[in-house]
Length: 315
Image 1 (cartoon, rainbow, N blue to C red):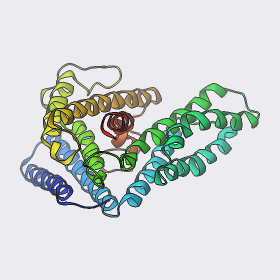
Image 2: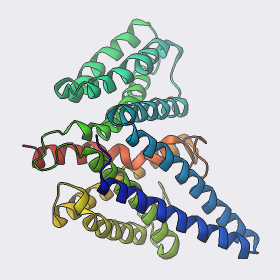
Image 3: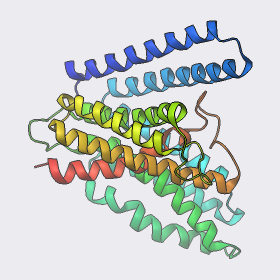
Image 4: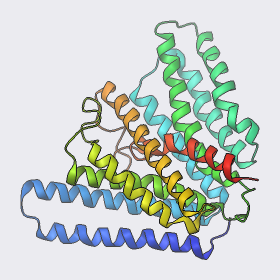
């Protein structure tokens, strides 16, 4: 995977945006006097520090090529699965099944991605693991709340490992006409649009939000934030068509799909947190909460974007 001029332009644009946002945050911290205002600015600056850290890690992974990207997302899946299982406790009888989930299923899913065995990559977790892990749990002989316990493990693997692995799987799409060897930009485009959609929906929601989409699930997610954030994301996505194998209209349509699926993912993951009575999945990322708090939209958007691109744009 090569670091070409267009990829460097994308990286430079993100760094410029982060620098501008950090300077604004620094200026606000010097001017804001009220207690509530200071807390808001402190939260903003904490989020910016988190974004700098995440950008640096992702940039390093891209710089090391496909191996670095696959390793980064494998580690992300491992941490996300840990958060999911921690927040949705299982039973002592599930410990061996969980050992297999963490130390066999997760690395093997990414190994299949690394060797580009798409046929098995696509069905390994939703078919074989879906059938075999419950057998391992049942063999432990503990039947109390068995269906609920098994469902938690299956959900954790599907969300945290299977869905997330479709982001670096974009590097497997080697047969896109006129785009050979440029898949690093495609991965960057997807992650940028997915995360930017979250940010823009947050900004529009905070400034214009009045009507909650699902007030009992996530009161902070408003129709104004959704519509404003999605439209702004589509505009940015279409403007970045030059870094993708898409034309401007195709880039806009795929950006729309990413933004809507990302919103749905955030809503679903918020419902799980609400069910468990917590605000965040963890505290791994300053200003953002846990790993799953940051990638909840990516979990749902990645498989959709991967398969749309594979179906319509590969030879």
